[in-house]
Image: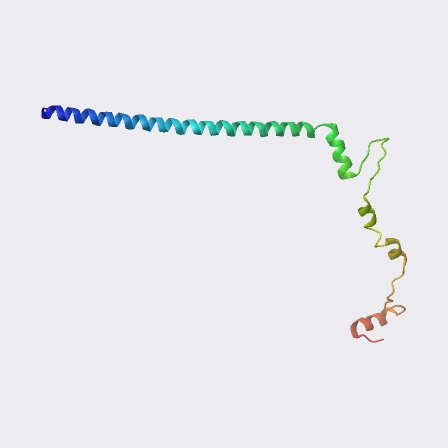
Length: 132
């Protein structure tokens, strides 16, 4: 073969390699764009679901049933004509048995103050010098 044909063949081979490189490069970029778009669409769908849930929650918050429930739970309110019954478990009812508040309030303290019956000056002397 002539030398000129070898150069043309090498040039055409280089063009084929370069074209193959460009095809692979653009195919890879297209793949990256497709995966990025897919992830953006998935995130958009998730955000749409969250927004819809928040709208539903906001609509529920503005209902009278929610306002009534919150008033009952936080402020111990009740509707007119409504009777409230509190159900307590056995553990909760026995929790206060060990401490009798009525006995604690009514009984006089067992320790009598050492300043009982002292005048004002005697109390000052007692506090300052512990003298009686």
